[in-house]
Image 1 (cartoon, rainbow, N blue to C red):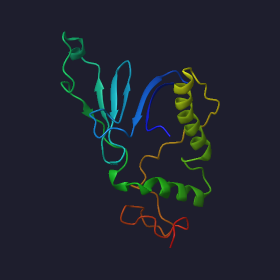
Image 2 (image 1 turned 135 degrees about the vertical axis):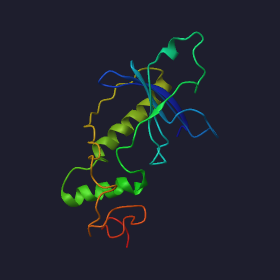
Image 3 (image 1 turned 90 degrees about the vertical axis):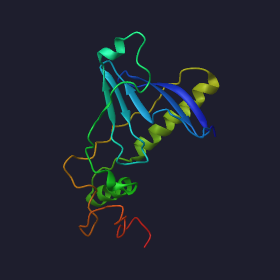
Length: 175
């Protein structure tokens, strides 16, 4: 299994993405995820830290200077988080359990997992075969977590799902 993968993705809606995923480096200054658009750039925080605010840099006059500003030489504004950052890793599993118990759809569907796997395998196949690889599967984009709800889903006993509460009481976890 490759531990260093690079490639280009063309989304069905038109945008292009350059991906670099590596487990072969000790450290980097590269961002975790950045999106570049016609009006500016968006930089997501470390996905392992749930309270890392995304940053936005809108196009400004500084970009037209000769020479352009040095990296890190322009102001990026923090975007307030829509949800509390104290939910931790358990939020996905708690959300899935809450949806299953309520009879609703959850965000981590088999359809989405199979689509992601197809894309990852296509990156590898494209590199080996040195050609563009079409993605055959399609999936619905998961709905975002609703705004205005508490920091995490409710546990079956009505308690709030927090790192301290964990997933105690969920029938999906060992007792």
